[in-house]
Every structure is written in C-alpha cells, then in structure tokens.
View 1 (cartoon, rainbow, N blue to C red):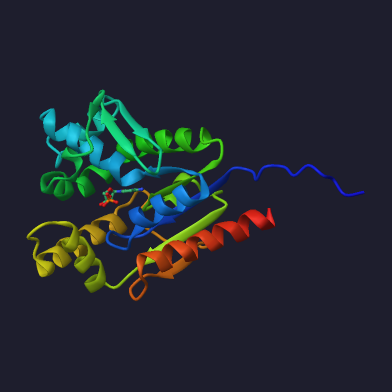
View 2 (cartoon, protein in one colour):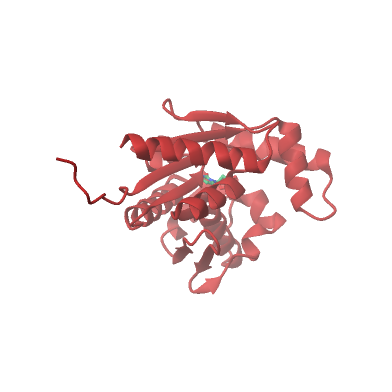
Length: 231
Ligand code: DC
C-alpha cells in the first residue's frame, strides 16, 4: 500500500570550491537561498582571523607567531544566505575583512596549519548544526573539511574572466594588476602544504568562463535537486 505521508528531504551538504573570481560566493549564496539551506563563506573566516592578527600586532609573515595566536580570536559566522555576517570578538568584521591589506596577507595566514585546524573545526561544527543542510564555499571543503559532502562542485574560469569579474567589484581597479594578484594568490593557495586549493576526485567541475551567473546557479540547483531526488 502507498504511504500518504511524505518525509521532508534530509539535510544536504553542498561543497563549492574553486579559485577567486569564479563566482563561488554569488553562486553559493543564491543556491542556498533558493533551496532553503544555510550558507557559509569560509574565505571570510580566514580573512577574519587575518584581520585579527593585523589589528593585534601579530606579524603575519611569522608563522610561529600566527600559530601561537590562532586560538585567541572568537570568530562567529551568521549563515543566513540573504544576510551572512561575521564577527570577531563580537565586532562586525564584514567591512574590514575586504580591505586590500587583508587580501594581501590572507594566503600567508591561511597556510599556517594551526590556523587551518582551528577554522576547519569551526566549519565542521557549523555544517553539523544546519538542520536543512548547508552550502559551504571555499578552497578545501570537498577535499578536507567535508569529504562526505553530498555534492561537490569545483568552479573554474579563465584568469581573464576572473580578473574582469573581480575588478568589476572594486572601484577603480586595474584589470591587469587584479589578474596578476589573483594568479599570485591562487599559486600560494594551491601550493601550500596543508589542505591546498584542490578539486576533489568526486567533484563536478563547472567552467563558468562563458556562463552567466544565472546559468551557473541554475546548473548547481539542478545538481542538488538530482542528488536530493536520488537520496
Ligand atoms: O574566497 P576568498 O577570496 O575570500 O578567500 C580568502 C583566502 O582565504 C584565500 O586566498 C585562501 C583562503 N581560504 C582557504 O585557504 N581555504 C578556504 N576554505 C577558503 C579560503
């Protein structure tokens, strides 16, 4: 006999990784909002700890000093995709973490193993506490943070497209300088020893170079719905 009651879909964990300028944040937020999931920007957490180091006089080039200080800041992420928040020691850090100074230092800070251990723990706690499921975006989510994610996406795009998108977001930015900075940061993020930027073996790669944001969102939403249907 057919059962009348339908059970609610189980929590779904979506990992979205890739280098900067591939549309990770816009895609992840929109997919989470459309599907009623939580959203976590893990880059913002690494930026937040970097900002704390800079404002507390820690030399970000000194890995040992960064490691020693890494447990000190209290970093709290709000996971509503329509209004994500981040605070450090109770202070709103959403503006300061986007400065050029933080952007230029974040790769060095996020390469320190103690920093990664600390932030990875926070990420796992947040994902485990999301009742409907969550979209988590970053560099090592599918490989290290949530290797059992239900769906792993790896976004790519040509360096030219990525630089054009990033400089479009920053007033007065020079596309060539942005491209050089992006390539340098990607090399640092991909080349570090502890959980580098990498595509998981079971991730679906989506090249966004010639796609509009809406097309990328549509593509990821369809992949999540297919996963949910098959569960
Ligand atoms: O996504 P973003 O540009 O805000 O990320 C900032 C930096 O944080 C990025 O250069 C590398 C680091 N990062 C990381 O090491 N691991 C993650 N999961 C997310 C970001």
